[in-house]
Image 1 (cartoon, rainbow, N blue to C red):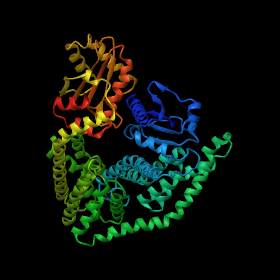
Image 2: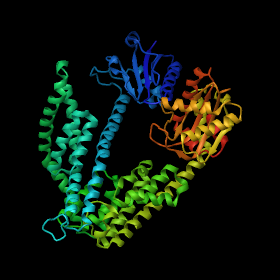
Image 3: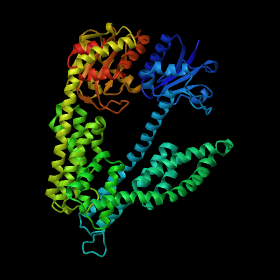
Image 4: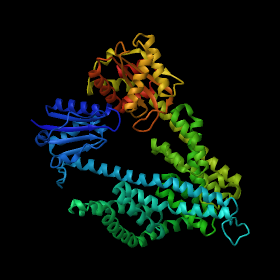
Length: 630
C-alpha cells in the first residue's frame, strides 16, 4: 500500500491547520492510501512524524505557510504548497505523489510530469511578483516624501533654490535638496528591496550597490528592477557555490565573502549593462519627449494610457521619469499632462463610491473617500486595490479618464514646474483652475464607468446568489460531511446587525443573546472565554470572516450562531488584513473539546470554497445562510 506523510500548518489560529489535515486524510481514505499528517498549530507540533515513518513514506505533502523543517525529508518526493491548496486540492496533491511525477527533494532530479512543471512555473511567476512588490512597497514612501518636499520648495518660487536668483530662500533651498535626495533614492531602494526579498540581508547590501550604479548610470526605473533581480539571484548562486566551505567560516562568509564577491560581480555586471539599459531608457524618454510636438490629442492619449496602465509600475514610471527629465530642461508643459493623468485614477475611485456607494462594501467605500486625499497629493497607487479587484474593466476605465485629463491639460497649455505634490503645487501652476477642471473631468468619467461596472457585477452576483446557495451547499456535503452542525445552528441564531464595530461589542452581543435563550448561565464568563481565546491567537480568517469560539463552564449546551455585520470590525487580525464582516461563532461546553476541532475544521473548510464565500456575502436572509451553514 502507498504510504504518504504530510505536514500542515498556518501562522495563526488552528482552523486552517486542521482543515488541511482533515482534507488530506479524507482524500487519502477515499483512494485507499495510508497517510499520517503532522500538524503545526498554536499548540505546537502534534501527531509528529518519526524517522521510521519518514523513511517508509513514498512521498511527502507539505501544506503549510510556516516552517516545518523540510530538511528531514531530503531524498523523498516532496510537494510544497500553501495550506489553502492543501484544503482545496488534496486529491491532486495525492495523485502527483502516486504518479511519481514529483522530483526528489534536494537531489537535483528534474520532474518527469508536465503537471508538476506547470506548478513550478506558476510558483516562479508568483515569487517574481512578490519580489517586485517588495521593492515597490519600500520605494513608494521615499518617492512621496521626496516629491512632496520638492514640490513645497517650489511654492517659494520657481528659482527659490538657486543662490543666484532673487527668489532664493534658504529654507526652500534645503527642502529642495532634501526632496532631490529622496527622489534620488528611488532606484537604489527599489533594487535593494527586490534583492532583499530574494537573497535576504546579503541581497539587500548588493542591491543597494547595484541600484546606485543603475541610478548614477541613468538606467532609471527599469535599471533598478534589473539590478534588484540580478543582485538577489547572484547571492543565491554564491551561497550555493560557497556551500562546501567549513561551517566555521559561516560568519566570514556572511560579512566578508558574500558582500565582497557580490559587490564585485554584481557591480561589474551592472556597469556592463548600463550602456544598453541607458539606451533603452533614453529611447523611451526620447520617444515620449518627441511626441509633445504632435497634437495634444495624440500626446494626451499616449500619456494617459501609460500613466493609468500600471499606476506606479514600469510603464507609468517611464512617462513620469520623462516628465521629470524635461523639467530639468525647463519644459513644464509635458509634466502637466503626466501629473493630471496620475492624479485622476485615485480621485476616480472616490467618485465611483459616491455614485454607487451601496454597491461597494464598507471598506471599499472608506478607501474611495481616502483616495480623494491621496489623488490630490499625486499618489496614484491608491487606485490599485480597485484595479486589482476587476482589472479588465477598471484599468481601461481609468485609462479613459487619465487620457481625458491629459488631453484637456495639453489643449489648455497648462504648465506644472514641480515633479510631484498634486494640488499642493497649485500656486505655481499656470492656469491652475483649468488644470483642476481637466483632472476632475477625467476622474468623473472614469468614476462613472467604474460605478456602472460595479453596479452590474453586484446585481449579477445578487441574482445568482440563490443558485450559488444551492450549488455551494451541495458541494459542501459532497466534499466533506459536516460534524453534526445541524444540531448546533438554528435560524433563530442567525443575525443581521448594525453598529457593532469591535470584537468586544460583538462578544457582548453574543453573550446577551445566549444568556437570554438559556444557552449561557453567565454572559460575563462567556465574554471572558472569547477574549481569552483571542489572546492566544486571532480567530480572524480571510475574505472578511472570523470564527470565534469559547469553551466555558458557563455554557450549558453547545451552540453555533452567525452574525452578518453592516459595519466591519477593523480591530480583528485576519490572514489577508481585511476587516471582518461575517462572524460564525461556536459555544463549546467543558466536555466538548474533542468536537471543538471538528466544528472549526468543517466550518473553515466551507469558507475556503469561493462559492460559499460569495453566497454568504450576498445572502440577504436567514434561510440562505442556514442552507449554507447547517
